[in-house]
Length: 479
Image 1 (spheres, rainbow, N blue to C red):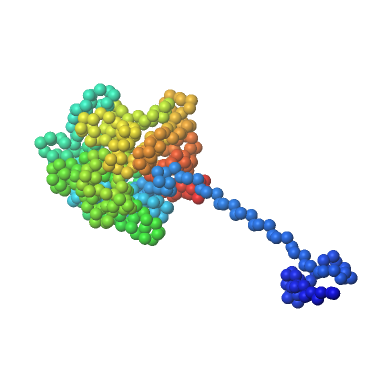
Image 2 (image 1 turned 135 degrees about the vertical axis):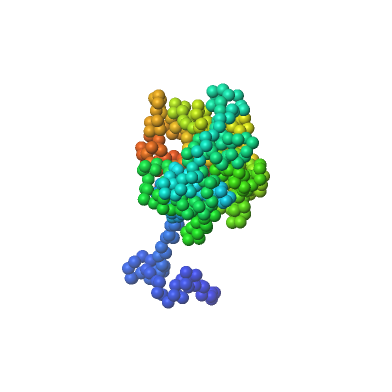
């Protein structure tokens, strides 16, 4: 007996095709006369998309915290405009500078003024003014200084056995207002910034170019007024607002021992006080700049100035400047001792001479010296050849900077970074006479060598050139 079986359930695939109304029916073997089953041709699955190639990562920067090195407008943009004037500072900001650097002195009426040297003939038009202004002419300092014996061993290795002092009468502290001897450097027959009030400086005297004065523009010399430090702060604030970048100010307590003696004689403070540093702290507090993260760096060649500031309440970042006198082009080593006044000016902090300490600035650059600096400062500001050894290979006697054909990093950046200190080096300039021969007259080549070595910042007279060189460096590192 034949069993009646239920009709088979449609196969899933066929059911799906039926549901589509036959629109997807394709002959399995081609031709039309075949009554066999019809199946669709299913295309192969697409190949997986290739994994995206990761973008190349920029190479790390060699700065202490991996940030972009700073361009510091050294006295503004003095390569193109009279230094430490409004035009110079505004131009530096417009050229891409991150910081506006200035030197500070105290005027006769105890105002912080922005001017590089305390003697005025080489960075203002005072000599021209004196020709027609009898009041200005009468303030020229003409009393010679007096020689004082050093109190450390007076041997040749320590430099000259005597230095000049403006304290011509040890019994009269106001006698320092008669001579013009600054940290042992003689500027007799010149004018002192401390003999003028801020109003008088603005009324009578204007700024000029200084370094490479014979090669830089001069049409604005004597036409731009001298600025107070508050005015420099105001320029930084205004440019920060207009550019959307936070510009820092970078004031230096200049010749602080001399400035304080002058200021005390002028009635700006009591005997033994620190009018220069106190005025700086006061203006920092008034402008909300005395914070660890405030847009300011305080610098000085004088460690005692920075140490006093810390003890008096300085919270902002501080940088110990470090000087030298010359380079031994055979070894690349720094020369500190000289047989002239520059032992006292550039060889060691002036306070060390007064204290009977015969050591040199180079002491600060040893690991032990850097550790000491770290107790009161956040960074160092060395001269360029202390960062990069300049040598002539093969050596030739009486070679000059133009003959230098080898420039290599010293251990300083690595040692300073190990101590937790930033390194801001000075001073970068465009003129050929300031460039090592290896740079072939190209200032960008000099910047690139220092950026590649891991420098944290550069003091530059040409912020425009420094900014362009930094852009090239950042592109080189994949940024």
